[in-house]
Length: 237
Figure (tube, rainbow, N blue to C red):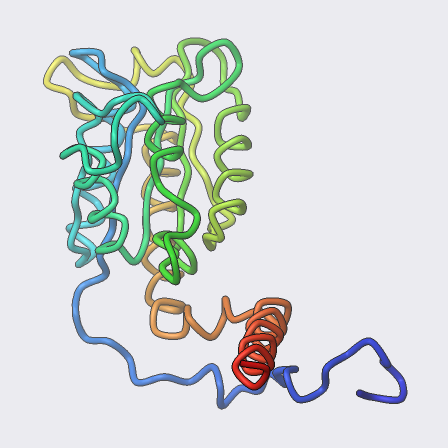
């Protein structure tokens, strides 16, 4: 207990320092998982995702793109379902993620939300998304909007992810891709490059210290109280 802060359990407080933020840098390529929110044959969110993947690979990242075809609705199947397991394992593998969704009725699609809803916030002591970096992008069927990226930012915070400041919203996406599915030169394309650069930078910056960055006083306090209760029970027995 501290006189100035009597509610504080002083011995459980972390006092951050620059030394605690230093870690031996990992040497493997940044591992980035990309999710997109459409099942259409010509899906602009998928085309934008694949464009982002090419950029990430060029920047030295190792990438995986999850195909949402065959993923059941949340709670509509057992978590052992092959597509659910695939998504979970890819989340555990990743160090950063890219979420790209169309905007439908002013919001992200159900396909996008279903993928995120299948990812548990916690599974025992495992948090599949905590501390991972996140970039968000959206495609629009009309004028530029930010409803979907704003929603995904809220979800990223809820999933305890480090969502980068930059983002991409592509207006009139049907005009921005060639028949072959490649993105045309434009300010929208340049913004996607900006976002992928920033994602790689933040991933390299945080991946080795993510456990420290996400270590919380409230959770340390809760763990200490549970341990104290177990010891008291053991003593009573």
